[in-house]
Length: 169
Image 1: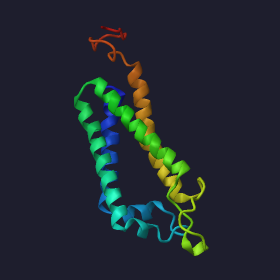
Image 2 (image 1 turned 180 degrees about the vertical axis):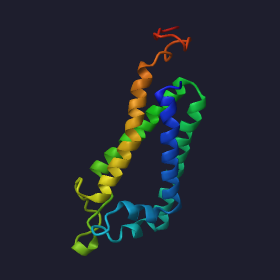
Image 3 (image 1 turned 90 degrees about the vertical axis):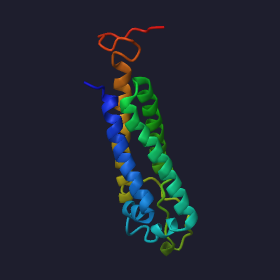
Image 4 (image 1 turned 135 degrees about the vertical axis):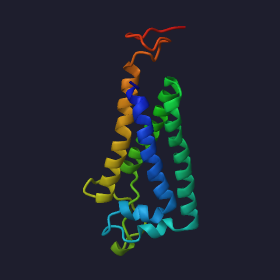
């Protein structure tokens, strides 16, 4: 039976690849989905600029390439899976940090304030809550997989059928 990390990496990778493809193909629609409809009426218009669309496209392309490694790691060794899992965990935690400390919801012009005034972290904000739950669902299994991977026999052994991990040099 494959280890937990070997099983979870391709699943999380496929989910992230699909999400990034959706964002890459239609960034305005995806942002409007996550933004609350009443608070930020013109959010999608800000991503329709050529510069912003180019940045979204490049970011999604890089993330698709990264998450493709998770699928490839299924067929490689446990060391590679561990390193790919660490990269996934780092990007997932960075995304969580970004959502909490710098959400992209801004006070709209209809409230007579300038765009760029950040909305404080508030779980009552439906768009922020959706993104937070989605990021947690895609990041928590990786953390659990890395912890389980560290305790599995075979990480430090040459004999994968051993019941105890022994360090070999």
